[in-house]
Length: 347
Image (tube, rainbow, N blue to C red; front, side, top):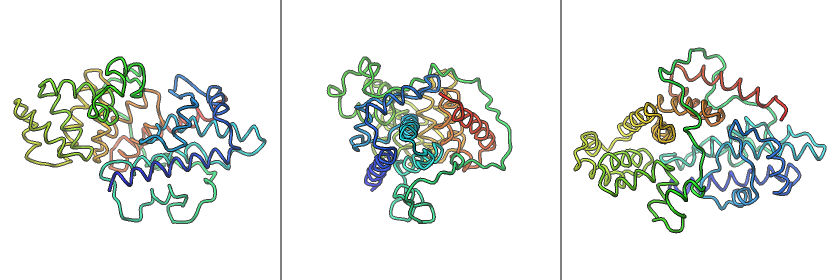
């Protein structure tokens, strides 16, 4: 079951994070927060490690993986804690190495991830390298970002204006913005909470409109659900949209095809991007990219790069490169240099 695999990936990743803390000298949650405050670069979206959030993540209480921004802040704080004990932080593994571990866990959590086979991502999460050799500690080397080909060349030509990072907020469903718009989590319907977890604020807004009879919103929800491995639930929304006169919805109802859903999600992302709604654009692009849509993965990487999150951008650009996108490798080279420069700059 995909859900079982995702739960196992989350728990395995939490165990790796707990081991990292132990190898850093078991710093207190308070110390991790103070270190993250000292190391944080707000302009790059790096969070502070609050005690409650860190406790829940390490205890495996979260049903979803932590964001890469949180993991990067945690790894850097553990490095700083180990340095304070007089030990070499290199033994903990580089930030880039931890990005690969996080990316493997993220892939394992996606709908459609293959179960029941010997997957390199599973080996990585279990503490073994891709060849199956046990890893006592993360290797100190700094491997490239996922999918980055050092020999590749190309040019970045997006054909669109760069998005404004301020239009792409980084929020959680317990944030004041979510509570103000959707009410406290305990007072929401189960469906609303589920759509907020899956699709963020755009998902909550689409649900409200679709339940009010908006066929365009029903179509968008159906597309997203078809992309993320919930076709039966998505079909109900698509049928509602088709009854409302949305021709694309009727065509998707008859095809039951994830590739067609991915194309539709990409087009919705492009429409949102052109309208300046980067939050919605990213939701559509990421779900299309998880269905192996190369251009959607590339656009997600571009948006995240411009939003000041080059590491997560690297994940999506790596996917685009692996699918043969002509500009992704060069863009990966560009942000790799940016990230390396940030890592070498004293806080």
